Amino acid sequence: MKRILRSRLSFLGAMTSTIVLAGIGAASAETLESAMSKAYVNNPDLNAVRASVRATDENVARAKSGYRPTVTGTADAGRTFSEYEPPNGRNSTIERLNPRGYGIQIEQSIFNGFRTVNSVRQAESSVLGSRESLTNNEQNTLFNSAQAYMNVLRDTAILDLQRNNVDVLEEQLRQTRDRFNVGEVTRTDVAQAESRLAAARSQVSLAEANLRTSVATYRQVIGVEPKQLAPGRPLDRLLSSNLDATLKVALTEHPAIKAALHSVDVAELQVKIEEGALAPSVGLRGSVSERYDSQLVGDKVINASVFAQLSVPIYDGGLASASTRQAKETAGQRRLEADSIRDQVRAAVISSWGQLEAARAQIIAAQAQVEASEVALNGVREEARVGQRTTLDVLNAQQELLNARVTLITAQRDRVVASYAVVQASGRLNSRALGLAVNHYSAKVHFDQVKDAWFGLTTPDGR
Image (cartoon, rainbow, N blue to C red):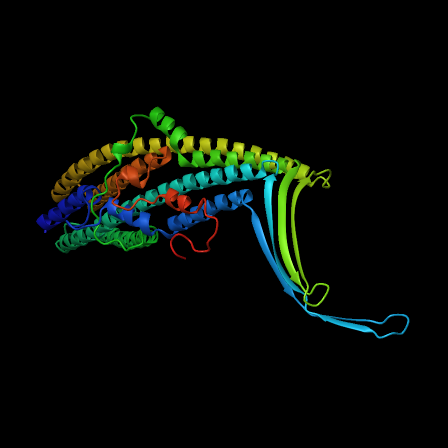
């Protein structure tokens, strides 16, 4: 029985060092990179943001419509009846007409206080900002997928440890009862072993619940159920050499900061657009029409005209002034928000870097703790065999070893996740940097397809 117990304890030790870093799957297992690739392609939240960017692209075409003429066609038809009776009582005149006609009108803006120019620039800045927001959402999705992947690995390993701990404690309880039957221990020792076994079974239930939660999150983020998961390894190749270098990269490259700066540009251009409402505007208007039966039966009238029109705003009740002041306040708000996002990025880098260093130190400490706990457990068991230790001492030593192994598994998971968190905080967690085997989404493709479109109701993908 003692040989069986030792073999199970050895199995627990092997589980600690292999499950998180060496994986739980076979040769055909899902890898962390392939899981992130699936999330990159299938995640509905990320795809929704891509659709939002495509919708934002159309703002450029809408703004450019201000450069183009507007053409309006009209047509009408009717019937009129008139009767004229002269005052001298002579015969009255009755006339029935079928007036009808059609025409076309063209209007072209020549100058409108640079509102069209600034609207186009604003729309283009909005597109660039939406792309940076998309990149940031891509970062978040890839990080969430890495975190979900490692959580499943961690919780699977912990569940296996807890289940095997139950097996060990069942064997321990069996041995304690045998010793009680021959008078070597008391009923108290048996009760202590039974209590520890009941607690271990409770921990198995908790571990199963945690694993189910992690599996559900994995399914939500990545889009498939986790089956066989291969090793999860730290993303050290994309880490900068130190914290200062990481901060420099983050403050320069992070997409959230870039998106905030584009929002500042959008707000400042809105100020110019509102100011443009106070400027004069110049336009051309041309029209041509043809009418029949307008005065007499069978007549035909053709009208054509071209006008240059100057419009000078004098007073609009203060609307343009209020709108301009409002736009200036909004621009100030966007600048403050950009500063806040910079501070958030800085804090995220420092926090994630600290977590990474802590996880590295935790692994070293946990490995030493596991080794020391294994030695201590073997010693306590030998001492208990000759009567120098109690059953409770053995149970406590076994629990300390189990706790150390769980701590090591958690630290190994934290080490991997923290490395991804640092890369995310620095703004470099994207599909190209990770080398994912996917068709990398390019927002520029759709933009080029629609930015100069003059007409058409069908989207580039055929909808």
